[in-house]
Image (tube, rainbow, N blue to C red; front, side, top):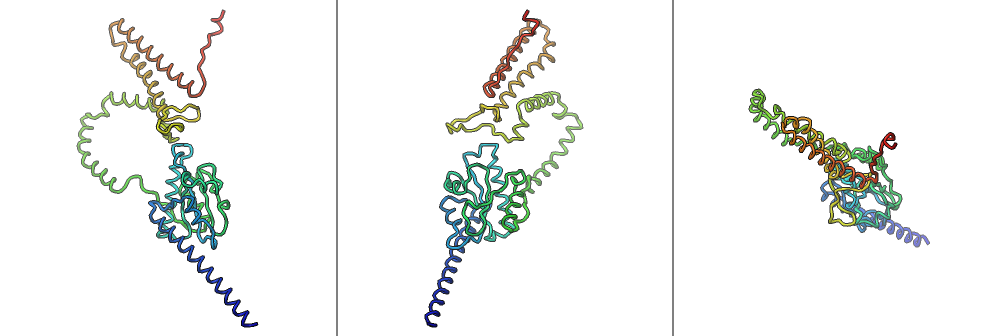
Length: 341
């Protein structure tokens, strides 16, 4: 009886040891593969599809020993300025780079991954992701994809620093301090400083002689026109909202759209075109008030004034028609009450 119990105990021990060794070997191979894919990436983000997600996120035969961070992306939505997917992807890559540098190539505890919709539609459905942007954390263990933690969509979390804070709070792994690349490199600074030193004597000589473009009234006149054009064309709106100049037609990808019908969005091209119409009216009025009186011929003055009126009427009418097409509103004229009697 004792011999039978001993044989059974030894068998159970061997099964447990074999299972542990098998599970450890499987995850050791997976971690090696993930580190290899991470090393091949330019910013430390691993691109996964449906098959690779099942391989690395499947808690089999043992619970996952690492955390997976997922950035959900869709290339066809990169043109949508409201989502800012391209900007968020750069911030996400910067957070991944911070972790890779801080852990000397990655510790194998956290992996930054991305899922692109066309290559991982089943994965989007498995995570329950139906809107973008989306970032999720899949913790270690045997939980499924539905158990992943979603990052809050706040302004702070849209930065690399916010993403690092989110990952550190979920994984208890120190990622490091985000180091953003400088706007101007050292070589560029050296070249700029050298150029300034070389041109400084010539510039100072021209300034002392009052022979520079800054002393020319035509330069300031042109600058005033450009500032006026920038103001009425919505240039500041395009910069703040980062609006695209044009976009591809969703129904016909080979066709470009320069005017967007609807009051919720304005492309850069339509702002520039309307700004050009306003600028034409402004420049013609400036010509009438500053230069027309220098022409001695009354007939020439009247003819030019008539042309200016026609140009102004056509430009304003075009702006009004575009506004009606875009928003559905129309400008109506009303007679004074005293004229009706």
